[in-house]
Image (cartoon, rainbow, N blue to C red; front, side, top):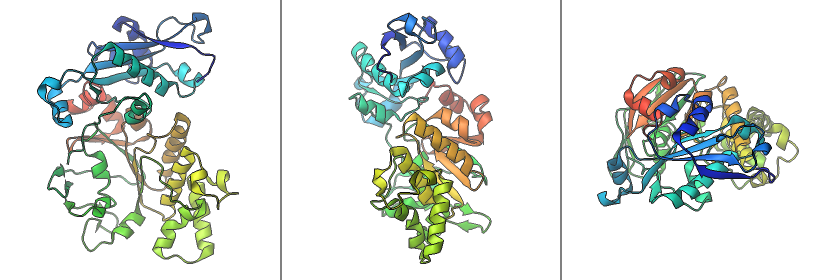
Length: 399
């Protein structure tokens, strides 16, 4: 953020926020759907400095009481008398001109609003927010406030303790398309995602019911006779935080090929270059392939992880909130890369950022409490969902 720009946060009325929400919020008619709450706006100290030449707020942050306190109480293990102080950061809108001119203004604004909110209300915890550019936990910790995400509830899938995490889920993943999984924290999105490449096998006692069929060979990847390592070659995964190995850039990308038993240096060299080009990283690292991967920036490390996943020529790539730990510029790079990759493979992505799901996905599935509530084309999900539960989540009334 520019050092010469002086902002301040102040409480504003719903009437003051309506023009901003109606014009710039991604749902446009958001002012009609939110309940009264604690509304905050972003102003300039000196109006003449403002590039927008307006006196109304250039951003808003709206905190509301949680619509179903009993669910929150159960999720946090609180007593009923502790319901007071549960809030949701349910609306966020930042004027696009401000986002363009001020670096990382969104996270700065949210953190300042949270700090101000704590002073103005008896806040025990803030549950979530649906339409920001950053993961809630990152911002909350940055402003010294503990983030309480809903606890993970437990195809059918059972954790080792017998908890049933996923209930009768059926979902097609279309070839060369991006499918997004959305839903509140703890609804089972990541649990479901990790079934596809059998990550749950790494923890004794977990078990699956049902099957995941991989076409065209009709292979059930959950079958006992199928090698999980080979499944992970065909179905690669990129995690929430970049997780490069403590090796060189070259060895990170070559790792999957070496696990597969590839010994030809010429072939490995070709695959490493091809994967790095596919991840839009080659030009940035081609002269330092033997440098330690940890020397790369966060966004570069995430693209390196994508290159590592691409090296084994997967048919499907799984992304678990791949941009939640990245800055806005790196986020744009990853989103553009995903849109390019879908020409070569199928993509299944978990995201809490609904604008992101609307921007990049062809299909969207809404999950809640381990169940698949609705699946359809993304345009339909965001403009005319079939289920009221989906509409409530999309419009921010819940979640």
